[in-house]
Image 1 (cartoon, chains in turn cyan, yellow):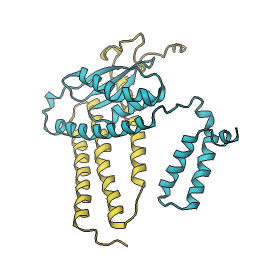
Image 2 (cartoon, one colour):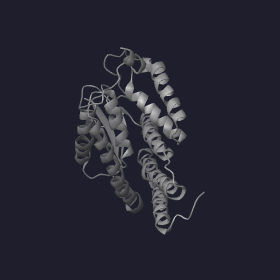
Image 3 (cartoon, one colour):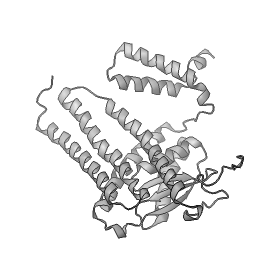
Image 4 (spheres, one colour):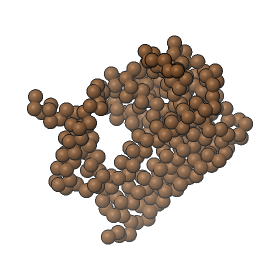
Length: 164
Length: 128
């Protein structure tokens, strides 16, 4: 199919075009054309690097995921700011939390690890070597099970639908 | 040409600048106050989210309300930050763990295999 040959990765083409338009910060036909040229050319050149590209299962869920993460970032920022500013040093109990993963796709695990790091109060440190568990460092939390439960219900459940 | 943006716009832009500044400052204070590397790692993740986020929203509002045009660069900065910041934090965490921790210091994985920094992935050739 010719269309498939020109656009082997339509989502990447669209992303590249939009990013280009945002970079030049001005919408003209010329810029749009240049963006599309990049969008066609770059996927063709980089094709060997994404042999098994992930499929997006639920685009609307991805939108919901972004909103949930942004909200969590704001809430957690305030919580952690309170800990940093007002909690005496000896009362800050940091600990490791092990999160067993149900996700198997590498892309989904990457997004989950990135999300855990960006939401303040938790930093993802490493994976188990078979990719089945995530090691998370908590700045201060009294109940480690709650952290694990939050990560699984808020992020992992949605990611499972986004990357089926 | 920029015109007078009006009081409300000025208040909104300043408010976001102050929010961004405050959280950036908190990130810095955290870097000073916290005890070890893993705890300090939490501070920059805050500065990059709400600290930078506040400044970027203020910048977008400024262009929208004062210059009267929509600016997308701030959204791109957000996207690039969200892509790169976790990777930096992750690499720092891994290096610190490799140099300062032994395998017994971490909680067990609850699986057959250990943590990736100490244990080879299943099916890999064992390293000498």
